[in-house]
Image (tube, rainbow, N blue to C red; front, side, top):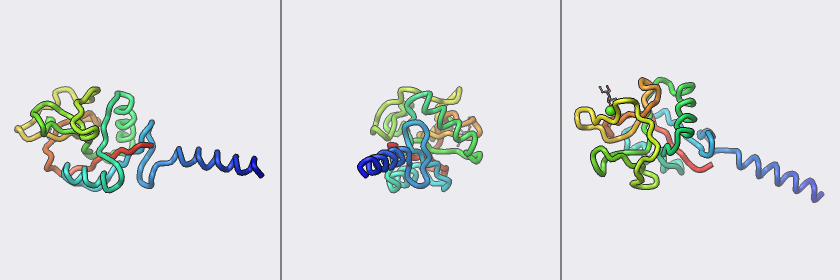
Length: 150
Ligand code: 2F8
Ligand code: CA
């Protein structure tokens, strides 16, 4: 009986550890929500918080590769907001989480960020750039990517 209980506990615990909440997918060490609704950057932030998560922070080439590979397979040809801006200082991009953290790794497309027309302060991954990073106006409605701990 003890052995059965122990076995159940191990299986249940292992199963729970492997799972992400409904709608999220597990890539590496995090759970990601690739939202198909389109909202402005502030709306994307609020949506992610509502779902117990934050706009994604991409901190390594490995994480960037996992997300880009997923988008290249499932990205629907769209642009996705990710969780960084230069709203605190032109040209100095920081992550929303941890708040104000400067980018370490970056995955910008060649020539970006360029603050086109002087109005691009939010970070995105556009299909047209094969999901390499681009700065875009924060008022545009795009899909977005949320992240939460696995
Ligand atoms: O050529 C790069 C340039 O392309 C567009 O502007 C014409 C992008 N704008 C939007 O996606 C809104 C720029 O961000 C990009 O730098
Ligand atoms: Ca740009």
